[in-house]
Image 1 (cartoon, rainbow, N blue to C red):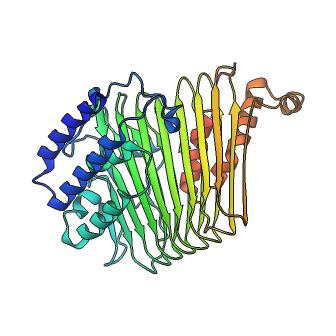
Image 2 (cartoon, helix red, strand yellow):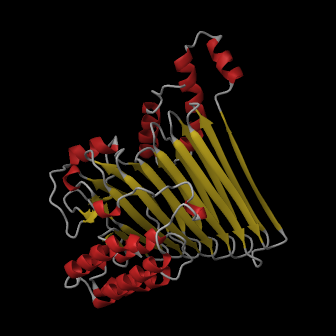
Image 3 (cartoon, rainbow, N blue to C red):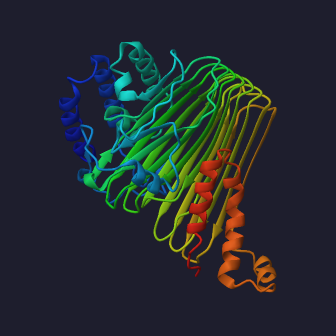
Length: 442
């Protein structure tokens, strides 16, 4: 219990700050979430799922929650520079965990839709019931990540999107989270809730960036609930400061014949960990998850995925690549779990790692748990250095050693970038990938 004590103090102060600013039902959900966090306890070195995400020596008392929306001098031009390109016309911008209205551009999705701050929505009688129902249900979601409970107990703000049935949104919505240097040692805890109705379609981008240097902790949780035949195209870019911790969990529930497609690109943070819990609840649902992690220096990047097939005739794919230089560390822990009822499941998982240094480390733990007898499931993992024959081929044609390395490395990664269907984001990712090519290969 001693290791939980710093959070007890923080949670008590948080309750005191927000008790007069939100409905009593939300306070009860916070209290329940905190109790679940205490029951779960903090992970330690013997916790198998956290074996390669060391928390030892991490001083939790140094991080303090931000209890109200901060003032900031950040403007649109600076935001554009941080993003590496023009931010999307439709965007929600959160600064240190709170919606910044002056930087945001809220689209109009119709009278029955909602796009905006979850903090504002849970105080609105029209939407509070939806949020409370979803949050209460998500607390019962099978969850091995105690920091997700902590997030719900002390959430500051986040995006709430409600897309009604039979609605197709063509323009991508950009959810931007900016950590500023004004709040060093901050605990930033946004929570995003996206509910997509039957036969509806939406395109989303999540980006996590910093406007300055600092030691801070982003603890984010996102939940996606897809109705029948709903379609979500989703991308996440994590490019936070090198002194930051980034812990994230994404929960996905897919209804019948729905489809969730996602691409995750990790460039920043000292230690970053992204977890996905996908539950295919309806027949003929499809979930496609792709990811690229590029640690350098002493960065550590962890991806953990659990793909839960609960119904027949569902398909899923996990395709993750890692490019490691210097003393970078990458961890991939992917699981496909097929319940007995989920006959005719078709599920695949691939993890590939390219090591650009003798000092880099990669760990891969693919898992299959199959309780049905009529399935197609496979997993594979490869790791290695740049191919000598390919290097010789390029060098023999007059291409220098460093440029040859850049060409082969970019070729290894670019198929994931090319899968991005939003052109403006694809261009930004391509540029960021090129910037990372200035490595020193041992």
